[in-house]
Length: 116
Image 1 (cartoon, helix red, strand yellow):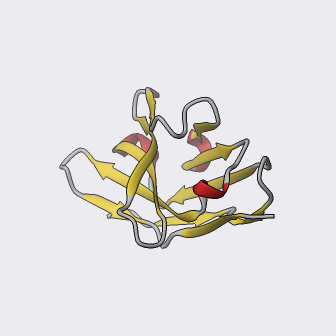
Image 2 (cartoon, rainbow, N blue to C red):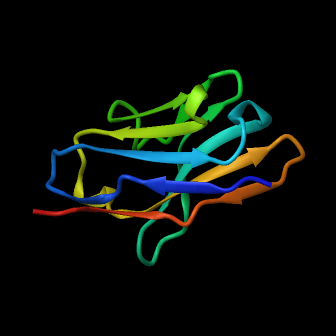
Image 3 (cartoon, rainbow, N blue to C red):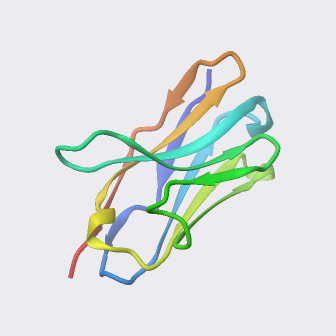
Protein backbone atom coordinates (compact mmCIF):
# COMPACT_ATOMS: atom_id res chain seq x y z
CA UNK A 1 0.00 0.00 0.00
CA UNK A 2 0.93 3.63 -0.35
CA UNK A 3 -0.52 6.76 1.17
CA UNK A 4 -0.46 9.97 -0.83
CA UNK A 5 -0.80 13.45 0.62
CA UNK A 6 -1.33 16.38 -1.71
CA UNK A 7 -0.76 20.02 -0.91
CA UNK A 8 -0.32 23.34 -2.66
CA UNK A 9 -3.76 24.08 -4.01
CA UNK A 10 -5.50 27.40 -3.61
CA UNK A 11 -6.97 30.43 -5.30
CA UNK A 12 -4.94 32.12 -8.01
CA UNK A 13 -5.66 34.74 -10.62
CA UNK A 14 -5.62 33.90 -14.32
CA UNK A 15 -2.05 33.87 -15.58
CA UNK A 16 -0.72 32.95 -12.17
CA UNK A 17 1.18 29.89 -10.98
CA UNK A 18 0.84 27.17 -8.38
CA UNK A 19 2.95 24.21 -7.43
CA UNK A 20 1.22 21.09 -6.18
CA UNK A 21 3.05 18.50 -4.12
CA UNK A 22 2.29 14.84 -3.57
CA UNK A 23 4.18 13.07 -0.81
CA UNK A 24 4.21 9.27 -0.97
CA UNK A 25 4.60 7.01 2.04
CA UNK A 26 7.07 4.74 0.29
CA UNK A 27 10.00 4.90 -2.09
CA UNK A 28 8.65 6.21 -5.38
CA UNK A 29 10.95 3.83 -7.27
CA UNK A 30 8.59 1.08 -6.06
CA UNK A 31 5.76 2.80 -7.94
CA UNK A 32 5.38 2.23 -11.68
CA UNK A 33 4.10 5.73 -12.36
CA UNK A 34 2.99 8.79 -10.44
CA UNK A 35 0.24 10.81 -12.06
CA UNK A 36 -1.79 13.93 -11.55
CA UNK A 37 -5.46 13.90 -12.45
CA UNK A 38 -8.08 16.59 -12.11
CA UNK A 39 -11.84 16.68 -11.90
CA UNK A 40 -13.88 19.79 -12.55
CA UNK A 41 -17.50 20.06 -11.39
CA UNK A 42 -19.78 18.04 -13.62
CA UNK A 43 -16.89 16.54 -15.57
CA UNK A 44 -15.04 13.25 -15.59
CA UNK A 45 -11.68 12.90 -13.94
CA UNK A 46 -8.93 13.41 -16.50
CA UNK A 47 -5.21 12.73 -16.63
CA UNK A 48 -3.08 15.86 -16.48
CA UNK A 49 0.49 14.56 -16.30
CA UNK A 50 2.49 11.51 -15.36
CA UNK A 51 6.04 10.47 -14.58
CA UNK A 52 7.33 6.91 -14.73
CA UNK A 53 9.88 5.16 -12.57
CA UNK A 54 12.43 5.80 -15.29
CA UNK A 55 11.62 9.48 -15.36
CA UNK A 56 9.66 9.62 -18.59
CA UNK A 57 6.90 12.19 -18.54
CA UNK A 58 3.65 12.64 -20.40
CA UNK A 59 1.10 15.43 -20.48
CA UNK A 60 -2.44 16.07 -21.54
CA UNK A 61 -2.65 18.44 -24.49
CA UNK A 62 -4.22 21.04 -22.21
CA UNK A 63 -1.16 20.92 -19.95
CA UNK A 64 1.63 20.90 -22.51
CA UNK A 65 3.81 23.97 -22.38
CA UNK A 66 2.24 25.21 -19.15
CA UNK A 67 2.57 22.40 -16.60
CA UNK A 68 5.66 20.49 -15.54
CA UNK A 69 5.72 17.29 -13.53
CA UNK A 70 8.86 16.51 -11.57
CA UNK A 71 9.99 14.53 -8.57
CA UNK A 72 12.33 14.61 -5.60
CA UNK A 73 13.39 11.01 -5.05
CA UNK A 74 14.92 11.69 -1.66
CA UNK A 75 11.64 13.13 -0.42
CA UNK A 76 9.41 10.59 -2.19
CA UNK A 77 7.53 13.57 -3.56
CA UNK A 78 6.14 14.43 -6.95
CA UNK A 79 5.35 17.97 -8.00
CA UNK A 80 3.13 19.63 -10.55
CA UNK A 81 4.27 23.12 -11.47
CA UNK A 82 1.40 24.94 -13.12
CA UNK A 83 2.03 28.20 -14.95
CA UNK A 84 -0.17 30.50 -17.03
CA UNK A 85 -3.21 29.18 -15.26
CA UNK A 86 -6.62 29.60 -16.85
CA UNK A 87 -10.12 29.53 -15.36
CA UNK A 88 -10.68 26.20 -17.09
CA UNK A 89 -7.88 24.72 -14.97
CA UNK A 90 -10.17 25.04 -11.96
CA UNK A 91 -10.66 21.57 -10.51
CA UNK A 92 -9.80 19.24 -7.70
CA UNK A 93 -6.37 17.82 -8.45
CA UNK A 94 -5.61 14.27 -7.38
CA UNK A 95 -2.33 12.45 -7.08
CA UNK A 96 -2.30 8.83 -8.20
CA UNK A 97 0.21 6.05 -7.71
CA UNK A 98 0.01 3.26 -10.27
CA UNK A 99 1.81 0.20 -9.00
CA UNK A 100 3.71 -2.55 -10.82
CA UNK A 101 0.94 -5.01 -9.92
CA UNK A 102 -1.56 -2.65 -11.62
CA UNK A 103 -3.19 -1.57 -8.38
CA UNK A 104 -3.47 2.12 -7.78
CA UNK A 105 -3.90 4.54 -4.94
CA UNK A 106 -5.28 8.05 -4.70
CA UNK A 107 -4.68 11.06 -2.57
CA UNK A 108 -7.47 13.08 -1.02
CA UNK A 109 -7.31 15.83 -3.63
CA UNK A 110 -6.47 19.51 -3.47
CA UNK A 111 -8.65 22.30 -4.83
CA UNK A 112 -7.27 24.66 -7.45
CA UNK A 113 -9.39 27.68 -8.29
CA UNK A 114 -8.38 30.10 -11.03
CA UNK A 115 -10.44 33.26 -10.83
CA UNK A 116 -10.09 37.00 -10.80
